Image 1 (cartoon, rainbow, N blue to C red):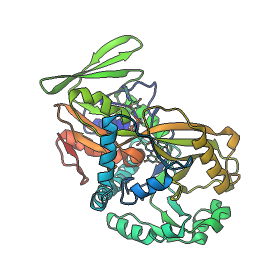
Image 2 (spheres, rainbow, N blue to C red; image 1 turned 90 degrees about the horizontal axis):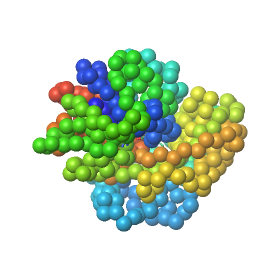
Image 3 (cartoon, rainbow, N blue to C red; image 1 turned 135 degrees about the vertical axis):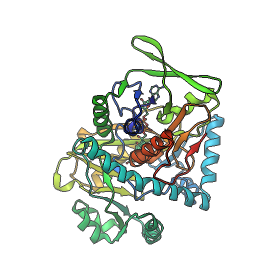
Image 4 (tube, helix red, strand yellow; image 1 turned 120 degrees about the horizontal axis):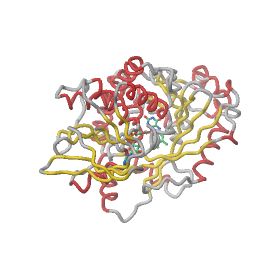
Length: 416
Ligand SMILES: Cc1cc2nc3c(=O)[nH]c(=O)nc-3n(C[C@H](O)[C@H](O)[C@H](O)COP(=O)(O)OP(=O)(O)OC[C@H]3O[C@@H](n4cnc5c(N)ncnc54)[C@H](O)[C@@H]3O)c2cc1C
C-alpha cells in the first residue's frame, strides 16, 4: 500500500507492480500529482546534484537576509523540530558532508534518468507529459560565479554527467531565445543530457496505466493515523466521503511529501523532513520563437524555466516557514519580472497562473529511501528540490529493496 500519489508514490507503485506486488495507493486528493508534483519547475536536472546545504550556503543566506526578492528566506518558528532541522542543515554544509551528499545524489540522478527513459517507453507515456530532451542551460550573470564553472564540470564528470562551458555567444547558439539577454551573460554551462516535462501530467498518465493494470487508487481518502501493534504496522486509518475506515496491507510505503514526518511522529519514527516552500508561474507561450526550447536555470537568482508544450513554466525561491500554501504576490511579481526581462515577448503575462508548493526537504538533500524501524513500514520521500529528477531511480531502488534484491544503484539507503 503506497501512501501518497505524488510523483514519488506513483512511480513507486509502478516499480512495485513490476516487481510482482499487488499494489494500492491512497491519496487525499481526487487525482495523482495534485500537491508538490503539480506545477514544479519541470526539470530533470541530473546536472545539478549539489545539495542546497553546501559550504557557501550560510554566507549566501546571510547576504540575502531581509531582501524581498531573496531566493532563500528563513522564518524560524518556536518549533524544536524546525531548529533541529536548521542545525542539521548547517552541519550538512561542511565541505566533506556536502561532497558526500553531492556524490550520492549525482549517482541516483544518473540512474534515475536511465530508469525514466525505460519507464516512459514501457508504459507508453512518452507523449503524455510535454517531455523535451533538449538539455538544461545553466546561466551565470556574475563573472565570479562563472569562474567556478570548470571546477563544477570536473567534479561531475566522474559520474558521467556531461557539462559544456559556453560563452555568451555559445549560449545563444544553444538557445536562440536568449539573444536579447546575451550582453548581460557572463557565461553558461550546458548539460545536453538533461530533460524537462510536466510532472503532474506524467503522474496522471502513469496512474492511468497502473489503474488499467489493476492497481487500486483510493482518491479522496485522507490518512489520519498509522496503527501499530508489537512494533509492526497493522493498518492505515483513513477518512473519506463515506466515513472512516481501516485499510490493511502486507507492507506500507510512505510517499507523503512534506506531511510524512507528522504522521510518523506518534510512532516514534523520526524523519527530518521540512517543507521548503517554492513558487511557480505558468503562462501560455505568446511567441514561439521567443520562448526557449532548452530548459534554463538562472544560477544567480535560482530561477528555472521549462517549456512545457505551448506553456512556459518559471519556478524558484525557497522559504523555510511552515505548511501554509498562501501565495506571496511579491514572489510572483519577481518571477514575472524575470520572465519579461530575460525572455521579452515569450509569454502572455496577463494569463499567468501562480502556484506554491512545499518541497519535502531533508537537511542534507538526500531522500529517505528504505525500511523504517517498524516492521512492514517503508519509505520513499524527502526528495526536496529534485523529486521529479530522482523519482524513477528512487522508486526502482525501493522496489528492489522490498523484494530483497540489491538495488542497481549505490546510495545510503535507510535500513531500519
Ligand atoms: C517551486 C518548486 C519547483 C520545483 N522544481 C523541480 C524541478 O524542476 N525538478 C525536480 O526534480 N523537482 C522539482 N521540485 C521538487 C519536486 O516537485 C518535489 O520533490 C516532488 O514533487 C515531491 O513529490 P512527492 O511525491 O514526494 O510529494 P507530493 O507530490 O506532495 O505527493 C505527496 C502526496 O501525498 C498526499 N498526502 C499528503 N498527506 C496526506 C494524508 N494525510 N492523507 C492522504 N494523502 C496525503 C498528497 O495529496 C500528495 O499527493 C520543485 C518543487 C517546487 C515546490
